[in-house]
Image 1: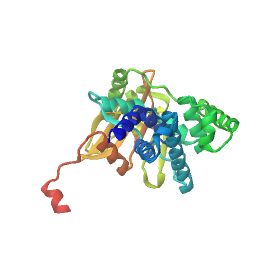
Image 2 (image 1 turned 90 degrees about the horizontal axis):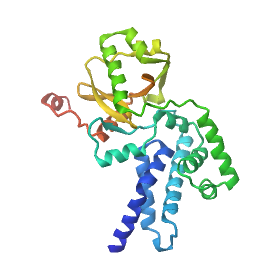
Image 3 (image 1 turned 45 degrees about the horizontal axis):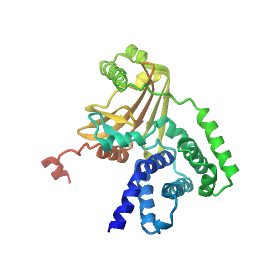
Image 4 (image 1 turned 90 degrees about the vertical axis):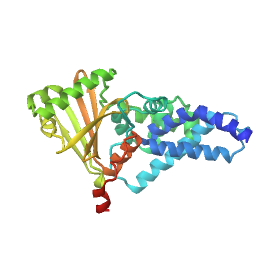
Length: 300
């Protein structure tokens, strides 16, 4: 028991870094947690005394699990979908919630990473974000160190060639801009909406069904879409460390909105409407399902 506890303590020291790396490689916190848990199970079945560099060993195991998951996605030819964000109630954060946000990266970057091949994504994340040497990356992706370097370089060019908006680091300022957007939307003030939106703003809506995504570009076109569902209510949330909202209709989770604010204007809005995913986000944020009523029982 003492040996197991000692091993668990050593593993927990590496968990935050492993989780952060897995999330960047997979774009899903649930899948990242699965990869990290698989690494723990592998460690329990291994002779830990024979592992010279535990951090490196664990990183290799997690990365290989992530590579397998990414390749499985491609094999299934899954339709492009918005990555799964980290959704947390916009209130006082506890240490666990702060750690979740620290592990996350912007949705815009995750979207770009999704366009890379599995090997490119791993090479870029492990080298550029976690400073793993190419000799070690080569063994994970099954290539030579020179090829691993080329994979990371190709991925880097693709990432740098995409204009990823940098959100305002001041969350209070983000909230002010988003609150002004809500107010103009409720008032039906088209001109005010256009002023709040960047001229090149992009609205992306992911409906989930068959991977359906709808993209609307330009302030005027997006302003025309700025109408909430009848009976909808907003619940402020943080989504990957930027301001967002959980929309509920009849107390049921309906959609998650993610706002990227830069230069006092909204430059991007991402909307997730997949019912299953939105429900998972609400559960993860600690928002309980609606209470069971007599009407609910009669309909069941």
